[in-house]
Length: 404
Ligand code: SF4
Image (tube, rainbow, N blue to C red; front, side, top):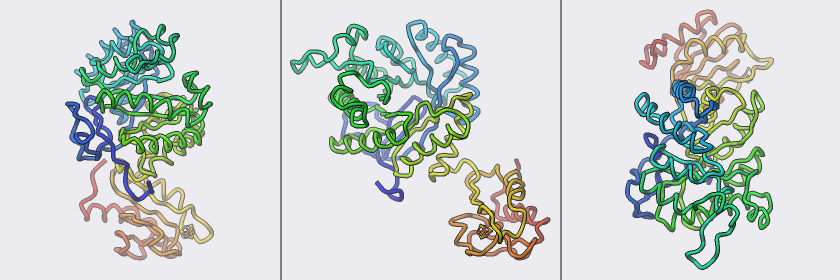
């Protein structure tokens, strides 16, 4: 799928108050009830995960509130065991009453009984296929991993049925580092193994007429991650499956490295039209992830909730102090979502350099600025000291200004 062909159509998956994906006619591929309207393509949802102890209900609820304030509407919490099930139930009760627009996800590893207990309590359960087995008794084969079956005390098909009954979505969260041993033995530690792992679980969902499934293929290696998602989409297409994708780079780290790694892995796929919800994983307070996620979405043309600035790097032709002026302009008009403003040091390459900016602030002569609306010059030769005010006046006159 090319960058300009739009997003991949998927079945719409409802995670409580948040619906992701869409565009694919779910009714045509599933007779399951409670499938949201498939006509609309929903925005790519930003999600995060608390780093509190789930049993510290107060701290967890407080952090969910901070994530919501930052703009996050899908929050995942780790649920290791039955004690966490109780805590999660209380957290869900409080969050539903305080912020009904927030979807809650339980992250389950090793304990399928926990996923069973939380179906219906939270809006989505995330399971790791590396920790599950698929019961093949129905087609005459034994369960593939008796050891896991014993440890798990349940199987994936039972979880699917429970989730369908309770209106709970499932994320099949494949991790490069925790593939089942039998998968690694057959495919190695490869994207193909990750795809094989996801597909066998997706087939169970389809056999049981359950469409409310999201898939992720995470790795800390961006090349593996990108390859795994691409191969997964090809495998799903080959079997006429249209499940939405949760994108993320695991263990991306912090600071610049974590942000760049996430932008590379997530951004590469988003620009191809793949991805319906994203999580930027930073080794920092999770609230920090939200702005990064939004910036990635904006850079991929999928979100306009921030003001977008197009600015040249400056060079020997630059006709004013570009860097501080860009900061001033950002401070003055950076609260206007949906606007794209170009700040250019000179006009050497013409207004075409400003791509599809709504407004342009362009060096004309030394110390002089020309203001554009789109590609049209609206004021020429404004002294630089007055140019920011002139830009604000222009935005006001055009009715796109709001007070900060
Ligand atoms: S727009 Fe002008 S000032 Fe900016 S980098 Fe290009 S040539 Fe240099």
